[in-house]
Figure 1 (tube, rainbow, N blue to C red):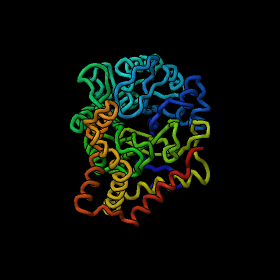
Figure 2: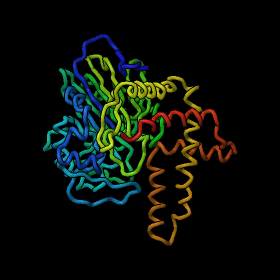
Figure 3: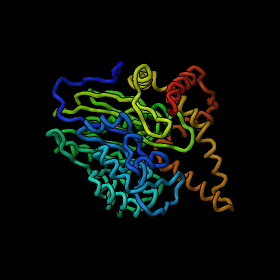
Figure 4: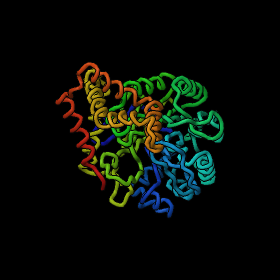
Length: 408
């Protein structure tokens, strides 16, 4: 789809501005230490020129930047990074930090307020979270290359968030479509950046694909997604790109997960009529926890993998069995153990009881859990849960190709 150079021309008109989008940037562990001390070469290596030449560089900041540790009660990990990280990102440069994600509130409202202050002091604009939650869904409109570029940022959010006060924008299909449509009336290019999807799977759900297409129909020039921690395919709908998952950008997780340690930066050249050209820039994690561009044969192989992930997106007959088999694999490896926690929801052990409660709240909060849960339960109820060996092998081969890029 994108060929050996990772590029695709969509319209024959001049590029007015270059936009660069990166996935999840979580400044923890070694990556966080690099950014705290301002070592951008160690953190971003030869990816830096891509940021330097962009008119607008946008990343998902997957951790609050605050001094005080005040973790909220939630199922997953609570992240925190030093406010000094903001000045390092500004020097990269990052122009916009997306804050609609499931970790923005990890250190509570005070942690978000300190994050907003740190980014503002560094000159980094924010979208997707605000000091007053009703303002969080407001588009961020910027000038780039003489164009008005509008960004809309929402996310799947875990747990209860007050209707007012500091917080991120939770996905609301109707409200998100309305926000895109209203932004399109006064902006040249509108790009929703949505933080959602099931973690560590290679293909997006039918619900997510429908939602992203609805955003295009509302007036978006492209749609960008992240949260799954692995890359997914990029497809074109009427010449408008949909990137379902940009994977991890800089995320030095403490456990070996080689499938999450490589991905791509998405570069889009835009003009008055929308996206003019697209380029994919694959990279992998270094042994020290930073990132470096893939080159030569390995770069070609990664682009071939991205094309292999994109190809079924254009063919429902090819995608449906892959998605179904992916759901069945998820049900066995991920959902069955969590459903078993249901027996502990009235446990006499407060820790076990709380973990069970948070588990089920997470399953209900995250709409993307619904598809694999339903598929797995349906197969159990109809006694048709046996895997399709050929399709499972196809999925395993794709995942093996991804993990081969591994750490370093």
